[in-house]
Length: 180
Ligand SMILES: [Zn+2]
Image (tube, rainbow, N blue to C red; front, top):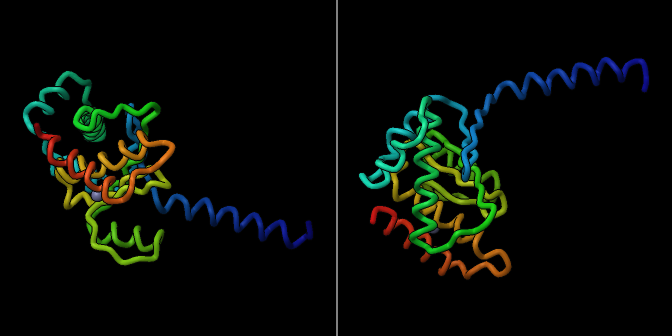
């Protein structure tokens, strides 16, 4: 290493550390989900938009909920369990990431970054990342149940992935019956 290289590397590594603190992503885990968000307001909006029906609601009251993140994770775990029952698919080692984004334009930006295409999704499930990206502003039970449907189908069919239309049909089925 040259005399000059060391200070340069030192400064560069500090810039990386400083850059990383720019995006204070919060992460919390439950049984089925790792929740990722950057902003408490986004978490709160997601939580208030994610209204459960009475049956699902009564199931989360038995859980130990202190923070908004606890409440969100309890709700999401209940929805995952319900979707698995609806689809009659109980895959082993099911665990996904759930990334909360403020609005549909952020979902579109994330999608474009990854796939280079313009879309107007309010949520999508990435098969390769095992991750749901969702707009907190547009969240509701059915939208989340649909994407969780995609993820459960993805985990269930390990060897041969069902054709796109069948995948979509099963996600729609989960969406329709999550409130049964
Ligand atoms: Zn779909």
